[in-house]
Image 1 (cartoon, helix red, strand yellow):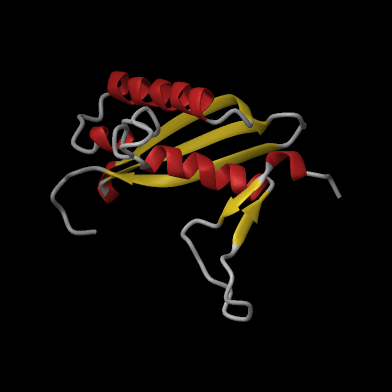
Image 2 (cartoon, helix red, strand yellow):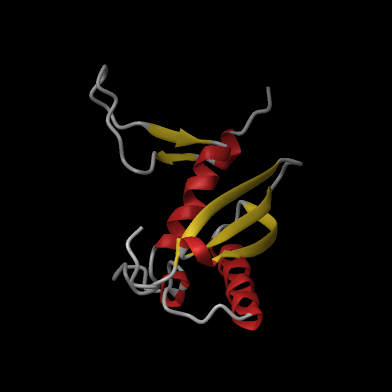
Length: 134
């Protein structure tokens, strides 16, 4: 088993309490990195008043047109944001696949965990502001 203690640990997201111990559930290693990537993307830049530069502009793309150019801009911005704000990852690649019949874009993010040869990924739907019920 690989020692991932250098990756650190933090509160599990979303925050959970272990009913047996009454303590907060922690995420560590690769899971901690994955949750950090998600939190960076889902935090609007400027939302945290003590860390104004933390987060991304991902949510500002909610009502965007789905042209290839705009999706490439979005992918590039996600890559740069993650490389700048999450020092535990490298070699970030983002692919965006439109699923317009579902009103969303499927965002697949692949990256390498720093200090190891471990690849990881995060895939999630990004819902567009189509006004349709989901």
